[in-house]
Image 1: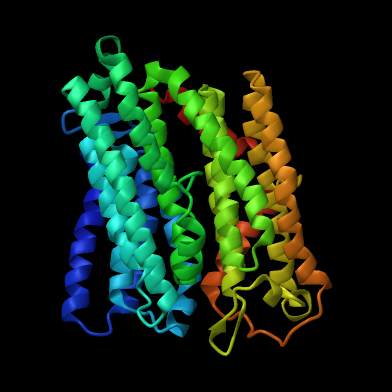
Image 2 (image 1 turned 45 degrees about the vertical axis):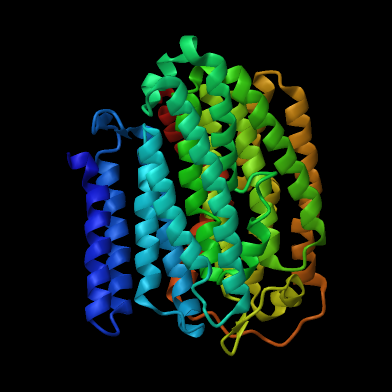
Length: 469
């Protein structure tokens, strides 16, 4: 049971800190510090037991290399989100203990999703995560945009949850079980019927990762939510949903590869093309990052559609690099403030190279990496995906991926053009927050120097993919 220590620690800490916040005033700083220490310790605990593989609760909950890799990635995303957001939350008067508690509860839901081997367990984790995210999106009660973002996310999220739950009920009706392995063994007796459930469940998961055509919530929610919440949305929930999708496709629906391959390819192509075209006209940096995330999800889904161990390894590498790129990008966005007011328009970046040369250079490198320019880490992420696609001779998917990457480079380069060539505006406040400086330094060092030893991450991903069953 020591493999379940992270989950138990998160649940007990969430409930304990909730009580502390209720009964002790001005406990936000204590709660934040405790959560940061807890998350760092959990990374260590998972790392110690990294290679262990065991099922719990009658095979409904699995701890293996895939779940451990994804959980560590989630924890890294949450830790850096907290470090980046501290000053922003103080400036926006959002330093409420509920904020950190909601994030911790959502992490419990994410861990449940990542390890679930049962449709009911998966759905419980999904809803626990989603309920927390709905509240976080609208946590700035003084902002109409934030309230609107939370309402939109709740309404559309409820619709997607209904579709997913309907798919789960169909699967249960045809197989008499919600267990992934039992469903997989029902392939011969309920094969055609199970395809109906597959479609609805994929629709529900596609919403959670903001894949086209279920992406409509992402730009508005990214823009309307507080920037600290947008940072969280851009990384952690997507990691959990992708891990659940990988497990779902490769265990209960492993025998349906030809069917889900076609669906995943269509969603992937639509996501890559729409993000490349729709992002060109965006003027808000957070909306731009929303469409950017849709494009990256398209690439990840393209890798999943291949269905090989190599492509799964490429997907895991891409997810980790994507998280680091987003950490750095949102750290830079948090630096653009003057007298407590934060700026989100791309035009507000004009002259940033004169005011904040280090931030300007960092954001430029991150834009290059997001565009997939060598030798930055983002290039390797795309290269691994394209290589796995070509190896399986799905040439049209590789060509569409490359074309979309070229088109999307335009809106990334446009940001760099504004930073270095547009007329400067008034100086922004200096960056004094240690958390932002540390997060940005880690992200930039990783992005710039990944090419020196790319095998470190790829070897870990290969090991996870080869041992995943």
